[in-house]
Structures are given as C-alpha cells and as structure tokens.
Length: 98
Image 1 (spheres, rainbow, N blue to C red):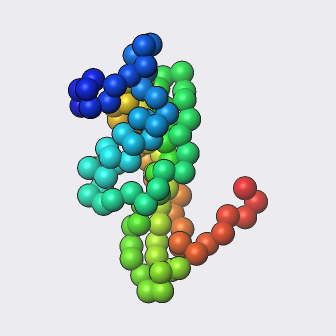
Image 2: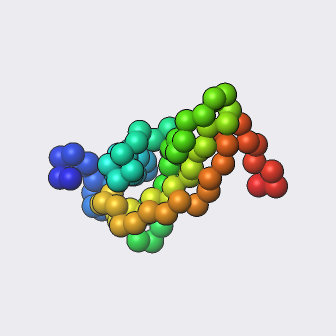
C-alpha cells in the first residue's frame, strides 16, 4: 500500500472513509471472501478500528446464513495491525439488549 493508494490527511492519518475501505479490503485478502458491510469505524489513539461483516456459511433460506463480525485494527496510515472475530450469528437474528 502506497501513499497514492491511500492518501492521508496532512497529519499523516488516513480518513475514516479510507480506514473503512482499507479494513474491508485487507480483511477480504486474509479471509478470501468479500465483506458484506462495514458497520463501524472508530478512531483510536493508535489508529483505527473497524467492524466488518462477512458471510461465513451460505445457507437456505438466506436468513439462516451464518454471518460474522470481525474487528480490524489499523495503524494511523491504514495498515492492518490485527483482527479478531468478535461475533457470529444467523443473518436473520436481531440484536437484543444492545
């Protein structure tokens, strides 16, 4: 990843949109699957965190497809520092108590 691929702000930090796109792209490379969506992106003192939803197992009906939320940790320039799966659920499942 070069600075032309992901231009930064004058401070050298990627923008929230760039962090969101970078998290999805880098997670796709690791998992070999296309992310479904990015549901959160947050600045941290050390960079960014982004929550990325992916399909883990296709099922019929579609509401029984197994989804997962991965938290991707990026440095200020948008490079992946780590990731972890934080949630696994059926696509049709509603969040309760959140």
